[in-house]
Length: 115
Image (tube, rainbow, N blue to C red; front, side, top):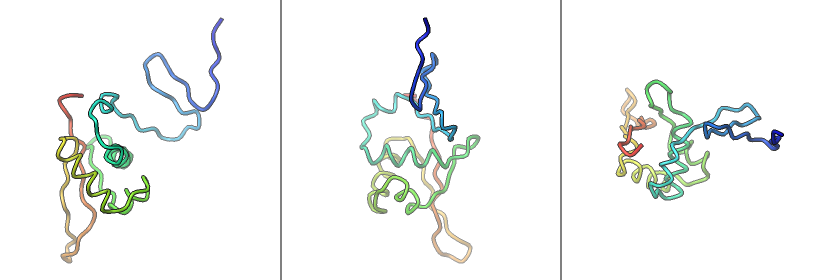
């Protein structure tokens, strides 16, 4: 007798979770949990992943946008980004508008040897 699953999520034999609401999902390597990131850094990492291009692993959300997504202040987002860069999970490149003003940073999700 096969057990029927209920709720919004189904867990398949491949260890992936499927959301029945049919919204886009973000997959995070489960080894990331062993990396001992701060909760803020983990939240910001996932927010950056949600914006990343699948082919280039790059995104450029503003720090204000990231803060809105994970309910953190811009200074706290900057601290979390610094942690991700120092841990080798993310590369950040400051960008400047042609007029000389600042614009959002470019983030690149890096392949980490532990993943």
